[in-house]
Amino acid sequence: MNCFVARQAILDKQGNPLGYELLFRLGLENRFPNIGAEQATRRLMAEQFLSQKIEDLVGDTLCFVNFPDSLLREGLADGFHPHRLVIEILEDATPDQALLECVKGLKQQGFKLALDDHLPGSEWDAFLPFMDFIKLDLRQTPLTDCARFIRACRCYPQLRFIAEKVETREEFAAAAEVGFEFFQGYYFQQPQVIRRRILTTDELTAFELLSAVNEEEIDYNRLTELFSRDLSLSYNLLRYVNNLHMGYRHQNIENLRSAIVYLGHQQLKRFTALVMTAYISKNKNIELYRLSIIRAKWCELLAAKVHPALKDDAFICGLFSLLDVLLERPMAEILPQLSVSEAISHALLENKGELGFFMGLIHDHEQANWPQLQQRLAFIRLNEAASSQCYEQAVQWSNRLGQGHRLA
Image 1 (cartoon, helix red, strand yellow):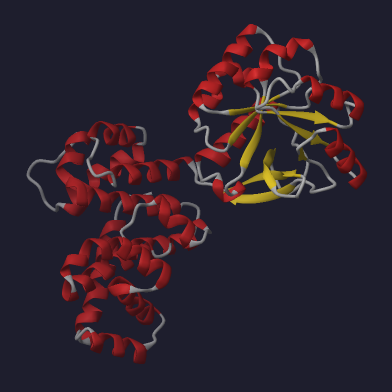
Image 2 (tube, one colour; image 1 turned 135 degrees about the horizontal axis):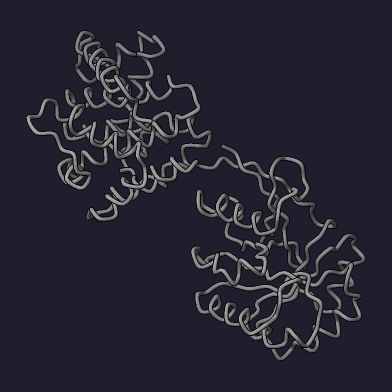
């Protein structure tokens, strides 16, 4: 699914970005939607920070986000990494002792803090030692008052001042003259609405699971918890162990943890990759998922005949070869999240290496590029009959995998 966010730059005097303020949007229309401030911030944080890398949106600069008073006291920020995030305390927050304690806690965690649309007043004096930025709205506070306040805050050397609602070159020059270091407003840039694809809850679980199984040492408690939170995952795991992967067994495995341990590290990686690809293909052409698993088995079978040590990587390479289509994102953005081997990365990004060669062979077969296919087969000393047999076995395996309930 897609999410939307508006991004407005905060620039220094030379026009270099200090960061961007992120503003929640429900669509491409560039205005704040008719929802509460709390809900807007919750959704923005979930959509922009949890499901993807914030660096893809703001690069190596800072990211400013409005936090309503209630969310500060609730501790919403505690679940996020302080790197790049600047928490903006809104002008309608209540500057009491409880909020001050929240602010101190956030500073201890490493967050940067800003007072947004600040109206100078003594009630906020206790907060100033903990602030990194103060944003003053030029439409609300005259430049003479801004200048007076900036001079009064010289005892707080860490404070930087941001002029908001800068709409003309003259306002920019005047704001710089009175001591503002950073500037935000229509003179520089209107908020730009950006559409980003986000992972659904099921997809997030699958990516989290994939990350867990790629750790050097398996944490079986964590894996059991991840499987337990998703009925479909649990069902598919037991089905994979009892029916699809292990074949006929006299005694079925019915316990999640036992199934995880029984599979072992390598097979667990394979199962998780299968499930993740299935989740991503929800609400899309199911044929893409089917082709992914055909390619996975096909590539594995080719590797088994030519370079058996590459079998496991070949399976994952074929399975992930359509992720860019399924996720509607460049492969170069996806692979770093998946901890794949260098061989897989080279194959999927650059068509290089033995795995890249196998994928080229598969593409030639799919596109009926027979002269090129024959050259590739001759190079690896594989005859056409053996190649066709690999393809037919992969299709049969895909059909067995799809019988009954799909991995989705």
